[in-house]
Image (cartoon, rainbow, N blue to C red; front, side, top):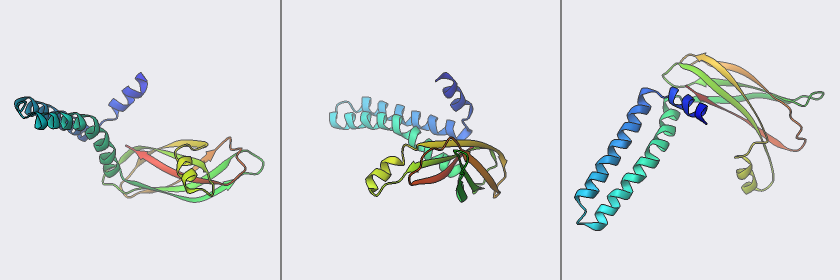
Length: 170
């Protein structure tokens, strides 16, 4: 847990600090307004609830949306092949840097999920892939497209499945 927290803090950029600081500033502002307007009970309670909502959801949603915008990329599967004599699947694809920033590193993950005839089950299966493998790609320039190859092993599933790839870049 300590290693994950340290890695998260080391990976923060200037915009993250601005986001977290502004959320904390709004939290303090609405708390003070709630205290000043304590005679108007309904308004004071609303401002205090709003301040805690901003404190909890603002940085979380802001961080996710901001990183999706700043580090925008696209991934595409070009081919997939299940090997016959080895319990593995080879996934070939492309990653494209669509942002205005240079990517120092990208963690590209290929995952396999079960498929059923029921749409609700497919939705639930999408949250829990039964096989997953990741690779790291370094130094992707703005507008650059790179070919990638990921081998998912051991892959013993014999029924119908879907493969997908995604990337988290910094």
